[in-house]
Image (tube, rainbow, N blue to C red):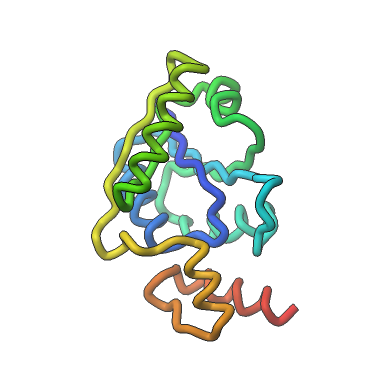
Length: 159
C-alpha cells in the first residue's frame, strides 16, 4: 500500500490545495492530508476547524485521511510509515524553498522521498495568506477557495 502525505497549514484550504489533492489521490493508495500546527504562526482557524473543513471539502474523494501534527515532518513520516511527501510548486520561489526543505529532510532521514507537483497556472498566484487578506478587506474569494470555506470564513469573522 502506497501511503503519501500532503502536509500544510491549510489556513484555509484553497482551490490550489484542492487541485493538488485531486491529483495526488490518483497515485496514492492512501493520501494523508497533514495539517501542521505551527506554533510560530497565528492561525485564522484552529487545527480542529481546519481538519473539519478539509474533511468536508474532500468528502467523496475516496482514500483520504485528515490528520494533524507538529514538530519535524520527518518524525511524522517515520511514525506513520509514509512512502512519500507531496509538495506543490507555484513558482521558482516555491522551488528554492521546497528544494532546500527536501534536501534537509533527506539529510535527517535518508529514506524520505519528496514528490513535487506543479500547480495548474489557474492557481499559481493563490496562497492562504492572500485569500485571508482579500477576504478581510471585503474582496471576492469565490474563485479562490471551495464554497464551504467561504461559509467557514464568514462564520469565523462574525464571531
